[in-house]
Length: 126
Image (cartoon, rainbow, N blue to C red):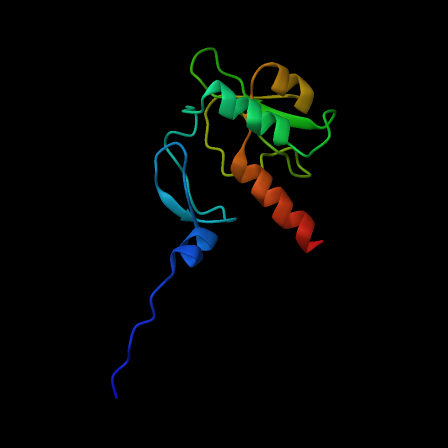
């Protein structure tokens, strides 16, 4: 008896994996399994950044974290857990600066996509 392998459809691939917008690596969706060395850079256009900011569903007065760095082009703000730590695996030697979501957005920071997916997953499980 021979085993015929099952093909994965394009829809299944799209539903299971996503591509890191920074480095192009594919990772399983809604997990904390991918760490990108390009986390502190942004290849978003201004229009894409504005679109992500406008689509953020969370309250403007909530506290978020940004990486406090003098130079560079970090453009993401991070959702926080109950210990005021980012939900994603943020690896940085720079200190975090805490501010409201509205203040981060006013400074042109867009939401960290991984943090938002992790928050949505946590809220759905509650």
